[in-house]
Image (cartoon, rainbow, N blue to C red; front, side):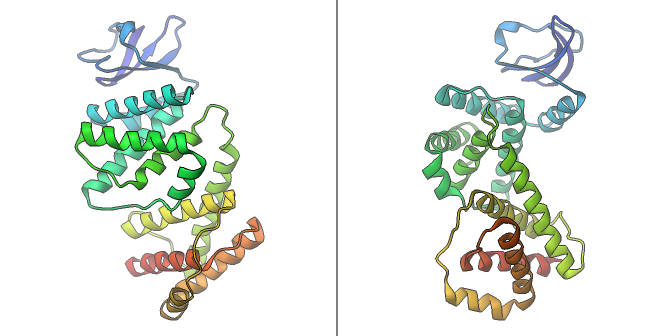
Length: 278
């Protein structure tokens, strides 16, 4: 194999024996290597034959500036997951998981905690993947000296579930993506504004509705229907509450999902914070 492009010490784009572009991964595999050099194939941990240029661009964007110690952790987590689950993961997991872990580390450094409201469901329905998520938190602590929030174990587990080789979650992923966009549009049209997607409140709102959309698509109803909090947000945040009423009607009509009071309370608070920052 001949190197075509070095992303960092652990990842390179190469031309294989058939002249096709491939991504190779392995600890130190491209250390002090340049274009045209040959690689030691005995240290290759993973090889991906790329179908199109977009795959190269995406991998490059994620890994180009990623510290080598973070890459080592991502490779170790996926290797452990494949061994534990007797599963082979494709290149997409190497992109999504690396991206998720990188930003989880950045959020932790900034003191930002993102809760995963699906943690209980992940523990119950995907116990093997959840245990790998917990293992991942330990190796991140050991190798990177950062303690991530326990909910990140569930988030990592969901990445594994979504990346399973049979792709049975693809349809649901598409539904979730469309639902998230539709909820954002409802908020935009309700207030007649363009949302600023660079704010912390927007990112927290987006994270919340992503998990809410997962619950809608999977039919998981959460909450204890706290009447006091429901009445408080209804009185204190009437515009935001009216906005969530539209979202509630939308998911009921289009997805046959009944939004619980607790869910509406949290969603109203997120919308209100979004508008305060706007």
